[in-house]
Image: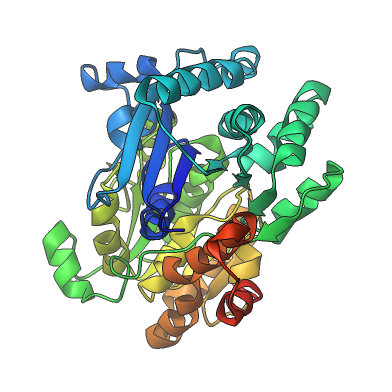
Length: 408
């Protein structure tokens, strides 16, 4: 495919969308990645508004080590955070993307959209106009929540999925949601991956010294946007209980978002200032140091697709405590890698964290298990899908077929 051009429509050029696209760029002549953003969020550049930070352009685009043949195109779309407004941005985003394509005379042979809406809708419309193959990846809320909000949303998402030449989704639970929509398109379940050159075992003491973290505490780490769906309030409730009989613990929550003030109030009300710290959002390149500095990782989400931070955590050799939602149970298949708890259940979470704090974890075993989730392995399977949709690139090799059939 080295003579072909790929067009990517995404919500961000950061973390999992960036990591996979960077590797896939090796197989193409040029890659053009459109990144949707709302200019309203740029207010956070001048006024501190934590709820807008994760959605600002500086948070959405990370040009670190960007491949030279990859062109990132920021695409502004004004809209209010209302369901009625969100339903309309598909057409707005398509108009903006298509105008840029025409103006810049962008040629492309394939479209890959991340998230079914609105990026998937844009991919569908571009396929209709330019008659090229279209792939959509259904990640999380865009497939387990959005299509089931009302009949209008059902039809919108179903149309996108049926127009695709292939659907990729990140968990078997997401696949069950797709089946409910009576979609005819072929679906491949491929989990998110991690960058093995960034997420690997590091010296914990050195990482703590780098981050000015105490050496005499058991550190519990959580990373994610500070939103309701991430369930951080249950983690704070858990810390209130554990701190009654353990004074050697410290819970660090990395992330920004709309619940920042509420969570800080909860911490103060519970008198947990010495046991729970909100440290704000951190650059993706800094995240491996936070993970390596911790003793265990906790993600108390109420729902998920397949969180990238899960495999990043395992890649660093750290045990993972997560809820029985989305694709998490498909990866934490053994107590050797972590524990699973019921969502919205602080009591269940407390028991699992206490067990994890008292267990001697085999970090080497965790790292070896995580090898299958390296982006290098996942993107080979995506490349195989690309090859199937661009048959003029040559015969699909036996190696491609083997990689395609790997069960991750």
